[in-house]
Amino acid sequence: SWKTLEENTLGEAFLGAIFGRDAAAGWGGDRFLFAAGGEGGGQEALVWETRWDTPQDAAEFEAAVRLWQERRGVTAGKGAGEEWEIVQVRDRSLRIVQAPSEGLARRIADLP
Image 1 (spheres, rainbow, N blue to C red):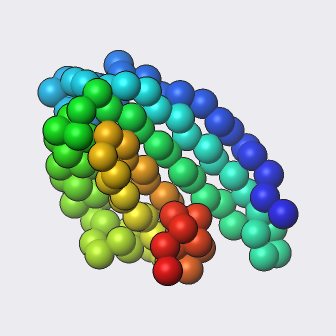
Image 2 (cartoon, rainbow, N blue to C red):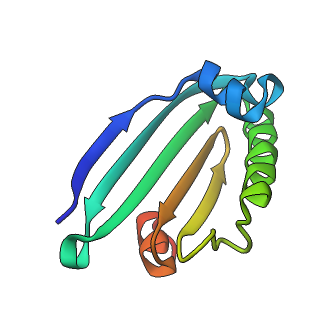
């Protein structure tokens, strides 16, 4: 019941502009998917996966993402309003999931 609205790559230059050149160093690729649907068809969700040359590069980008979240008022996974945001780091990848509820964000992130 979900429909892809946009799927694309942001790129190293974009990440450098948003998070700083140092945070974007070691970028190995990224892809995002923005979709709408769910119960009643009125939900939207974003999944953004980034890949890094080394686990250290991924950890440095995670630190920049956490600072970005802090500036946006994201605390304990909950963003501004009712939006939920989950950051997952696994070895050389970092994934951000944004969804309108904790349950949906956790299902998309494949968390219990």
